[in-house]
Image 1 (cartoon, rainbow, N blue to C red):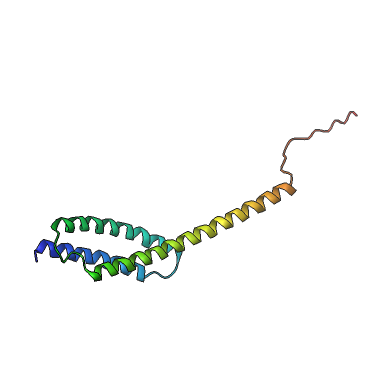
Image 2 (cartoon, rainbow, N blue to C red; image 1 turned 60 degrees about the vertical axis):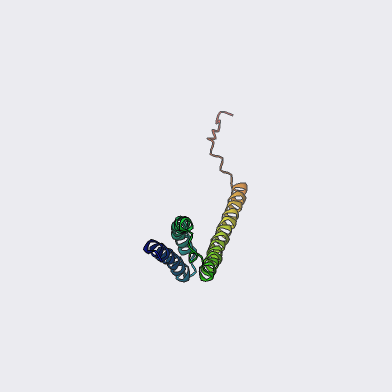
Length: 123
């Protein structure tokens, strides 16, 4: 095999390994999930450019069943991370709506009209 091809395949494997480590190291917090997804975006962009280079070479060893399985697992895990983020977002939006409702109720009961009132004593 060509050394350039070997280098490209090694880089691709390293990017996949980095993505897998980030996902497998996730401890469940939404903040951490956001960071992992952001890091993975750069890794996915790098993988995409590497795949373009590898397709240009068009060698049979470029795609393997193992590579496809790893990518499918990564994409599934990435979807789960994004799902957790969306669920947290919905929860926060619901909480904000509840706070706004409470604010409206309070405003209806308490007059916040701050106009000056003058009393005419000559009457």
